[in-house]
Image 1 (cartoon, rainbow, N blue to C red):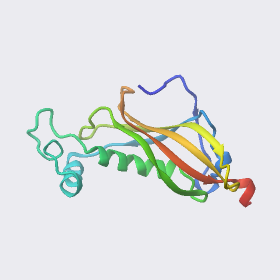
Image 2 (spheres, rainbow, N blue to C red):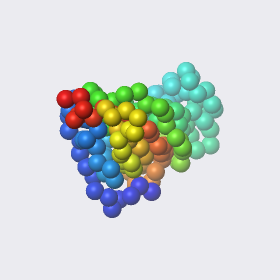
Image 3 (cartoon, rainbow, N blue to C red):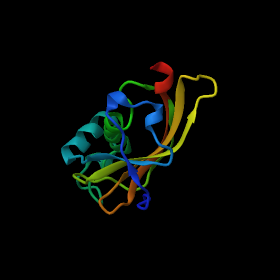
Length: 159
């Protein structure tokens, strides 16, 4: 379950976010998405053609590909968390977990918890963000989570 006792923070406009904009320990609400049955099947046909993503008669019904859910979350992460002016290429993500299935038309809420924010020891123009990204259902149950590593330019150094 996601932590519900934490305080939700906000970020400024995408074109004004720098390393200093992010608060270690903060939780950010990034938005929601839902995938229609047609979207799930179309994605599965192209990228993840397993029976439980394609066949309505599968026990429990169709579920979304985990990759589809992560890519849908990535849209919200890019628009509502990452900087539009100071984000640098990411070295990757860690510990991807699909915890519960995502069903057609199920609302998924995406949140970010900034677990670590530190200055780069080797490159003084940037900082490193370690963020736990989560998708949860209407009841607050985690559906997926992963840890993202991001490099973000510092405002003080490039301004």
